[in-house]
Length: 370
Image (cartoon, rainbow, N blue to C red; front, top):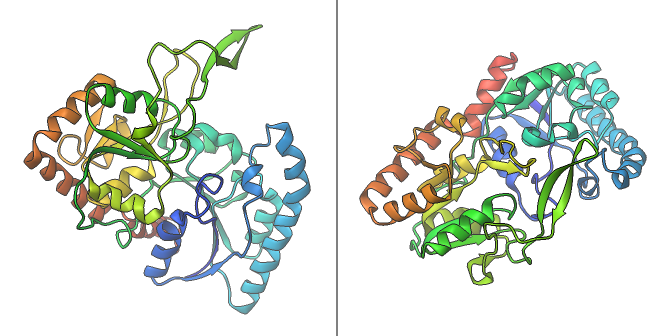
């Protein structure tokens, strides 16, 4: 199959500009499967700073630059299609990138159009304009499928995965007890601080962990509407994490090797701040598959959908609050044999069932492009 591929190197270009996360997870498996892949040659950097059409300072950039993006996209795909027919257009696009009409024009060329997007759990509004223009939207958030349909889009449930040729164990010393690699936000500092307060050696690397502690967001009712303000008093649970326990963002290779260097690797399912007394927004994460595939003992915040992919207490271990996190971290640090049995079982499951190769094969069969 000949695929026109329009995907940035990573979904985190603003904070991890050198990451090749999507390149290794999406592009490389397509090549491994024997497909011919034509890459859209474009610099997404400025667009990734202006993604939200609900923010006034982004609106002018989007209005001015979307036509330019669309013109270049159509020019390149028309050239490629004239040389040899394109079967599938695969993108990771936000509405801020391109107007829906450009996607429909690609479809009018006889090309099947498909968009992959993995932030709809709390940022569906960033793709709601463009999603209905595609033949298919790949959606990893099961609870959002009906929301896509209400927009007039055609979603396919496709959970995230990882590339086993890249995410694998390394023969390095396990020199850390408990680690987390990822951005500092939401409830993550509370959990890390809880481990440290319990005298468990925990470390975190990633964007903002070395920044001064941010003011805590507060949602309250003002004039009948819920609005987000900043909390000026200190929160009742400390989110301060001493700098000695925090590190900068890791390279992609350092990130993968950290799973082998850690006795316990943490995962957090909550993805966004929500109004007080509301349920947190959770989803299955890319990290859930990267960690297990890399041979980590994975201790992750409980989310019921995770049990569809890994068996709790046999392939991964889950926690629901800070006390349970501390108890389970302490227990498994003291029980090497049990920890290693779960780690190895999770790795076998990930490498046998949760590869991008298998995800793509499933999707292509479903849309008749096997």
